[in-house]
Each structure stands twice: as structure tokens, then as C-alpha cells.
Length: 111
Image (cartoon, rainbow, N blue to C red; front, side, top):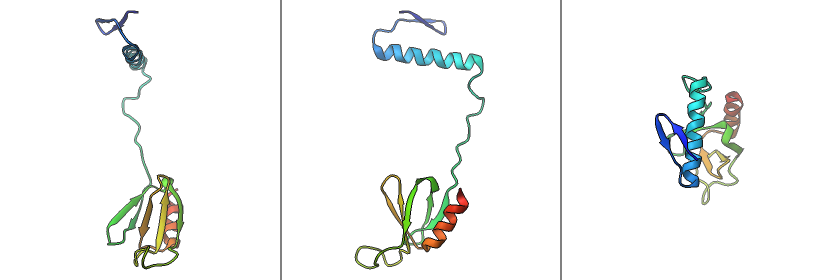
């Protein structure tokens, strides 16, 4: 199989080269037909800003929040300043000093 890429002749010798050639040709076709926008779309996330346990700013993507809960007990397992624990889709837990009612309010306003 021989494909033309620009002014060069490309003769793919393996599957990877064939796949790459097909992708390049598809991209060239999209550019020639105007299927690709001049400016890429902007990705916007409505992040909410909360306060971490030592006063640092914590930005959280509301779309990644699975649940929020108050700590069961403070002390040994939970930092004494933690007022709300946020669970995210990647399995992380983020402790913040804001009360869960405030976190819930900010999450609702971000959507």
C-alpha cells in the first residue's frame, strides 16, 4: 500500500505505520474541508474554592465530588480542624474546615 502524505511517498511496513498514516490523512482531510475549528474549544470547569486544614486554598471540581460527610469523630483518625470530608471520583478524601452545609451550598451554586 502506498499513500501520499504531502509531496512524499510513504510505504508503511508495519501496522503502526499504517495506523499513523491513516490518522495523518484523516487530519489533512479535516483541515482541508474545514472540519477543525480555528480556535480549539475552551474547557471550563466551575471549580469551587475551599480551605484546607492548615489554611491552604483547595480547588475542587464539583463534577468529581461523589459525596460529602461530617467526620464521625475528631481526634485520632480525623484532623481536629476537619469539619467536612469530601469524597471524589478518583477515591480521594479531601478534608476542609468549612461546614458540610457550606460545601453543599457551594456545590449547588457551581452547577
